[in-house]
Image 1 (cartoon, one colour):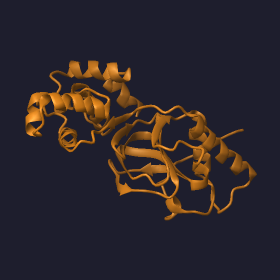
Image 2 (cartoon, rainbow, N blue to C red; image 1 turned 30 degrees about the vertical axis):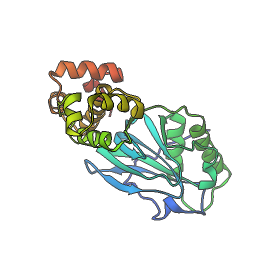
Image 3 (tube, one colour; image 1 turned 180 degrees about the vertical axis):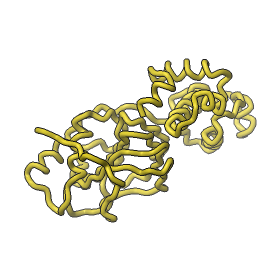
Image 4 (spheres, rainbow, N blue to C red; image 1 turned 90 degrees about the horizontal axis):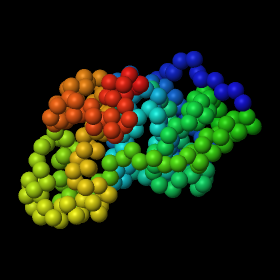
Length: 267
């Protein structure tokens, strides 16, 4: 099967009710660009499931109790009815697919991220060129391939789990707002009126990370956003509270297997 990309991606446009249609094609796709340096969609939910991915730029998705920073190598899947928000960092080029609720029964029941295969990307780009209310036999086959790729893809963790306990959530939100905040565990515990021991124990229970490891994850995910927005590596390191640029580069390489500068060149 030969799959061809559109020669040029235009501004993303979708039917106004594409996300909530109960009739119509099994999938409704669009691909294109958003020229703004950042766009955001406030909290919402869809009757259809949604696939979304970037080919340039970085997606940030909040869904349920997690914050995901999604590079161009990965796809986000949000099943029908799940509240979520979406934002981009840097000029965005990507695609979105809305999947009829009936077709979502065999797809993951929880929001997830997974690595975008070349086959998924190319079939979605072909589907984004379709128009009309019905799919012909060849289009139905391509739609089935898209769903099979989602069904078979292993989920990968790109998210930042958030604690549920109110005092811990207060700390988490404050640090996400300012990842350069250098307060230690004892100072954060005093600020939130919780004992250091409780903070340490409950953070592991509710997020799967120690408080120190969770803070490091916040900073690295924010670094991805800043790099996608064009910030110099040194600026990212200093703004996020690292003692030296080399310390930041070392931690970034350890986490992502690539230097910050090399990562930005791939965007």
